[in-house]
Image (cartoon, rainbow, N blue to C red; front, side, top):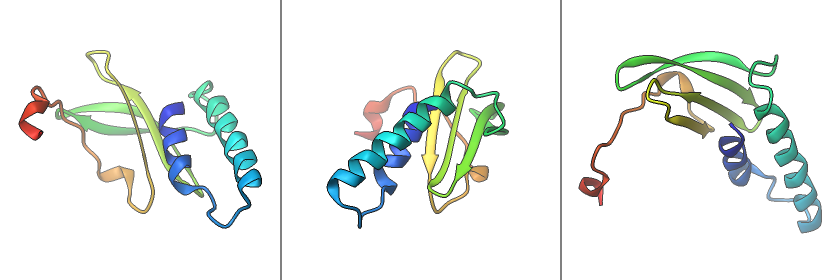
Length: 104
């Protein structure tokens, strides 16, 4: 959850800020991402079920003014995290790629 949150932040920080203020803002938002990731059962998160290889899988889901973040684990113990902005997470599905070389 933290990694997905930081990924979202790295692409959404205010571009019009002074560099030192932007650094302070990014540090504050990264700390917030850690706090939220440490409390996935807290009120800031909801649950969302998305298919992973066709199997409904529960994810922790959170929206903010910067976009959305989700985190979950598959039945095989693989941890998944994703973030986005400008598109809905509700239409996502995940699939295992057994041989990534086919995509190179």
